[in-house]
Length: 128
Image: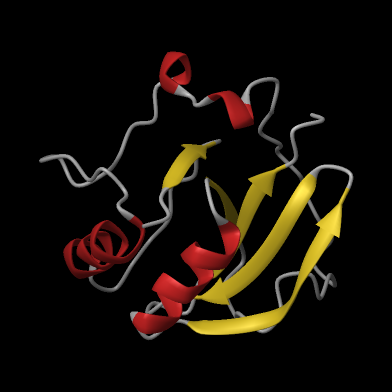
């Protein structure tokens, strides 16, 4: 089963945070802790993400990069197997959007989660 192996960090509002956290725990093995969130410790990253980085990117109000979500944010999760992760979230009812994309940084895929958030999944290349 594919799993999330990294997160740069994001805080966001949810209509039902406990239910949404459980969905991510079930379908992507996010290690949700008793306080309701998850912590990814940098010293535990697996080798395929070594040398990777997180980004903080302000975007203009008129960007359509976050489309089709109506939310004002998107987060990126590093995964160990993009195809499997996309299959798992689709099984959980997520809406897959766009085609996967290959780049010099790795492979990317997108979905809309049960709360309407656009999520980008990233499987890093070994060349980062």
